[in-house]
Image 1 (cartoon, one colour):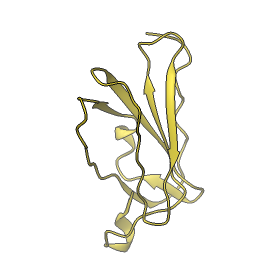
Image 2 (cartoon, one colour):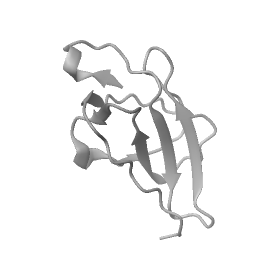
Image 3 (cartoon, one colour):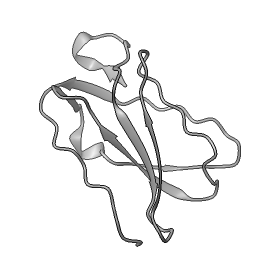
Image 4 (cartoon, rainbow, N blue to C red):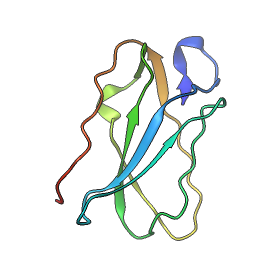
Length: 102
């Protein structure tokens, strides 16, 4: 997570990231919370599926482009993917995780 308000690439600690595969029954989720550097890693996630990645920011922060929460992403083999998500000061309405298979 990048603190866009600071104009730096400093990370934001305490963002909960939840990776969801809504096509499995029951819906499978993998969760992680960013550390001091604002980084998170998911391991042991089955490849070959499209996932939705949801972000839950700490109080006082919001995703800069709110329409990008959740983000669609694919897991391909043993590839390592990197992405950046900008956060700014503000009030965030937490996203709703799916509870039913699609």
